[in-house]
Image (cartoon, rainbow, N blue to C red; front, side, top):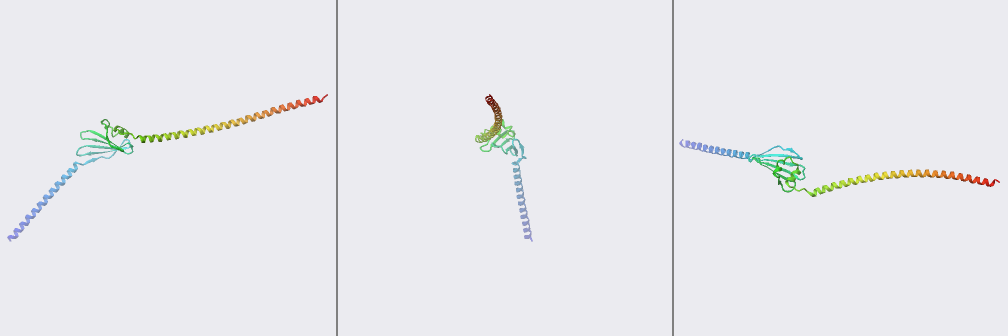
Length: 215
């Protein structure tokens, strides 16, 4: 009887020990999880919805919860020289801006240009950052425009020449018709005059013959 009692007490003590260990493990895990969540929460970066901006661009904004740094990224959709400009504002209010070209390395904007980085045109930002204009592309564009201008002038010249040719042909035709009419009138007048002179000569000749025959 005493042995059974001792065995039962031993079992109860063992069960209590197991329960204590289990509770301790749960507490430890819970504390660890809580710490992890808190740490994750402190490093979360919040982002705002994109908003439209000038020059066919849009701005997205994010804030780092730990440092308090606010980052505004303006992305250009169709600008040939600039892809985006990133404006960073620290918790203390210091602002910097960096311009990213389509090709090549990014460059920081001068301090006096940072304030308008989210409103200026892509061309203005590229010039302020010191990006060189692609002369080859500009030359090709100028050549194309020049060819179009030459083609237009050639077409206008051909049109003018055609008009002058048509007008000249019309004038020549009018002059030819007028000349033919004048020649015809002169010919008819000449024939009429010749006829009169011939008739008068014949009349004089006939009179002379008559006078000669009459004794």
